[in-house]
Image (tube, rainbow, N blue to C red):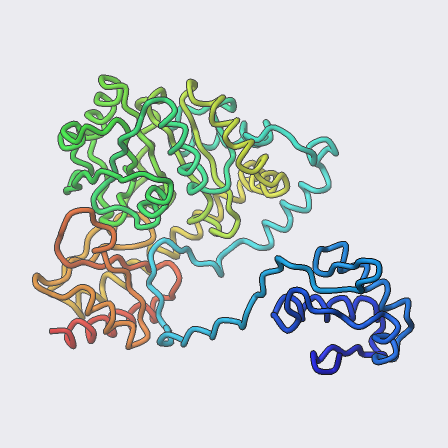
Length: 457
């Protein structure tokens, strides 16, 4: 079989495994086409310098896997129906090197509290009862849900009880489950803020929805426009609207709760970065005003790291059973050890200490970027600076937003255009994340952005 480049390394051991893998690869990449007759085991063994038993066992394994067919009197042939993989796709050409990434929504990943997490995870593994490592309640461990309910009540003024708290794999999973659950309860027209998170828009569309855009102004979502839209559910970010950074005003909060009670509408509150407020204490969550009509979603993606895939949903009582079953059939439940490690941070005070450290760090970074933009781009207006991990930059009227983004990339700077976040046309703007870079790098990024705007003209 030299023409097929099938060889074995006699010094590496596991000759049967080597031969099995080599023939399997030849079938997969098309060097051995369907119906091709393979050498007899004795001939193959002699050619490769191995015992006949090695060839017999390799053929038998590949027959069992469906790659080969062996019939008495007909020898061994390549089975029909195996789809060749073909040549590998050529690698994509690399894009411009990005030395300054201002993508919003990503925290300072280097700030993840590794030592505290290791300590909490070690304690969780030492203390967890054996039974809790099995297939448990898909809504999460009862003790963890109790800790979360206490934390959300204390920090976010939520009306949360353990039976209404569900542990999920991030806000994205909650939204994916809710799209179908709300439709089953008769809610089929979902509104979103305009502009809105492109990730949320993409997720909703991937699940078959065509969201209705409701404009946002300086007080947040315009509830009168929501009523006129005919929507019976709405997804919004009231504590720090994404991307404009507006906080939903008291009057609008009251009006939204009244709309939900009057119409039977459902409000989905994405509390994505409410832990980070710099001018005063964070605004309490909307769910506390109307716990029977508001679904409160949160996660550790901004406070710890997105890679943990750990979050929560606080649900109205009428939705808890259905959500639990949907979660069961989605993934059988979120990882137990991560649940317990996070609960350990909550109850030990480690999570609060971590957030205090981050608030101080992010405030300095925000101030550095805002100050630098004021010097470098005096014609652009900065908004949404009171909270969160990003700010909103209104570009001068008439600026080509896409061209600025491209010109920035040519200079090694990534910035996020707002146009893909809109459902209706709007002025040119950028969303700029500042959590991941130190102050001096943010000042350099602002200078590069000014160059990009000037180059576009």
